[in-house]
Amino acid sequence: MRVNAKLSKRIWQTCQKETLMDPIKSHDFSAIDYLLKPTIRCQSHFLNFETRLISRNITAYIFSKYLGADIIVFNEYGIFRIRSRTALVNYAEYVPDPKVQKFNPCVESAKDKTVLYTVSCLARENNIYIVANLIAFEPCEATCDAAEVENCETKCPDDGVFFFNTNVVFDREGNLIARYRKLHPYYREIVNVPEEPDLGVFETEFGKFGMIICFDVVWEEAVLLKDEYNIDTLLFPTYWYDDIVALNSVELHQAWAIANGVNVLSANIHAPGTGSLGSGIFSKDDGALVYTYEPNGKSKLLLANIRIGGDSEVPNISSLIEITPDSAVPITETGEKFPVHCYEKVAGPAVDGEVDYRCLKLRLENYSFTKLEKPSGEVQACNNELCCTLSYSTQNLQDEYYLAVYNGLNNAFGYYHWLEEVCVLTRCDPYDGKPCALQPSRSKTVFQKVELKGNFKSKKVYPSVFTTNNRLAPKQEWTFKQVEGKTVLNYLSRSDSPLLKVGLLGRSYKRDPEFVPYYPTQFKKVGVKNDFFLDILTPSQN
Image (cartoon, rainbow, N blue to C red; front, side):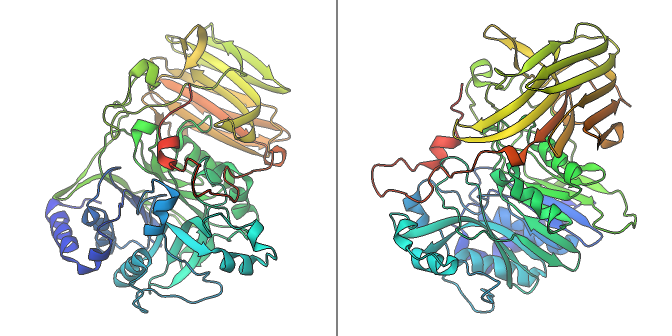
């Protein structure tokens, strides 16, 4: 669908004049918004990392009204960003449990709850579902009473308040219909974990949805949304870092959809300077319908048809549209704006965080490697009882590739740990005396076919095929199956696109150590460094 410049300009002007926006002009809406239509049509409005023009962000809502969308999803920290726990008191809002209390902030004119009131009214006026991410607060007594905690003092933070990273859902009438509080805060994220987990599931006339937030996707609770509650679509607000697991953001988002048989709408921030970008609309059957993964600092609208349930066919329509205050122009992304190497010690510091993509060095110290020496052949590598076999053929082996295998603990900042099984064919360059240490974004070698298989013990294995310039290979070019203890990915190239990576990421959820939040309960008023964004948004690992 093409949105012409005249329409875009008219929508922009309408948005600026809308008095409803006035109460929240002080907030940041550096967001990606996903819109969903019953057929199902999905769209995403992607907004720049540092923008503080609230009217630019709210343009997404006005677009949704004209384009007939049914649901919008903000990214994590898409409404505002926080610098310290003490600053939360200026932004956090109390969010009641919709299972216990009916609440319509717009109808009830709850203007003291700036974000909830504004989003509720936007949903009501535009006849649309909205999923927004914000920081919610709850006094200790209310939390303890709801969870039936007898000795509240042992659970209460020192500042007397629980703060939760929270998704809220409003229906077409502006009613609060669902709430989800993040279960797995990432490292020094200065929020609490709820005593009683929320069930982030809600139903609409066009499908059943589940919600998680960012780091939650690494853990088993995300998978249970499908296994126990049979959701159709996962809504995934995130502030994702490409260095967390062996697959980059859009690789993981697509792989999660395919492995779990659930459509995924991932809404990520755009902060390439910290390795944070990449969002898309992913079908459980066909993979990426449309996605954005380009460090260019542009605002974009993603549009696609996606089937939810049933066997009916839907038109294969998708668009990637660059949005400015004065125009809406269809574009394509090539990935050419990625640097060849993103590691800061090689590429240099990021000068502009909206366009200079940076990453950490690959953590491959405990991997087992086998280098590809011939244009075609079969190689094997094993690590802690996980054995992977690669059969391949190329036109001409022009780059250095390795079969890398790992079975063991992965970690974030040496604090959180989880079990992974990894088989990956990867383009790899040497660094600091190690033959395989950096994964470049470019390759010249065209693989005609690849078969990658392993004896995974993990019930969930996440597959991916990545080509040069960090592009997802079309799902039509590869298949994936798990049968009788064997996991197999077959890739058959239908183009001349050089290959970067073929990966299988297994998650052994039952073998994970216990998840313990970095700040389980105590947030000291003094003497504790609470600068969340300074600590985790700047690459600090060597």
